[in-house]
Length: 193
Image 1 (cartoon, rainbow, N blue to C red):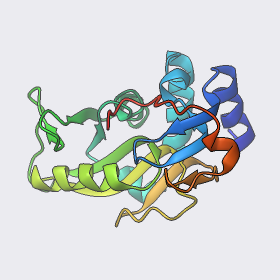
Image 2: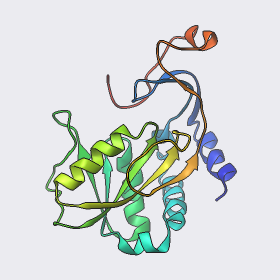
Image 3: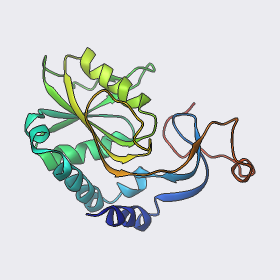
C-alpha cells in the first residue's frame, strides 16, 4: 500500500476528521485521525497491520517474541499486528494512572517486545508504555504505529516504524490560530484529561 492508499482507507472509514480537536497530549489540532473508525472494519485493520508488519525490517521481525500495545487505542492494531506476525499480542492498561500488564498477561525476563500504537504525537504514552514493559521484565526492540503525527520529532529511544507520517500542525492551547480558536474544541480520543 502507498501512503495515498493508506489515507484512502482513513477517508473511506470517515476517520480523517476536520474541526478543533484536543489531542491526548493536550495539544490542539484542526485535523484528527480517528484510528478506532479505520480499525472498526476487521478486513481493513488486517490490511493495515499486514502492510505495517511487512514494512518492518527483517531483522526486527525475526527478533520479536510478542506484541504489546497500550489500551485503548493500541489494542486492535496490536492484536492485528500479532496476527500478521504470527505471535501473541497483549496490552497494557492504566488502572491507577500508570501502565501495567493485567488480565493474566506477563512477560518472561528478556522477552523481546514490539510496542504497537495507533498514533504517536509526542511519544509520551509510548515512552510510558516502554517503561512498563521494561519494569515487567521485557525488552522493547522497536515500536510500530499506524500514524506518526510527530513530524519525525518523537524520540522513543528505540527504532520507530510508522505506517504513515503526517505533518498536521499542532498547537499549544494558549497559542491557537484565530480560526481554530473560533471553533469549539472536542476531544475525540479515549483519554480524559
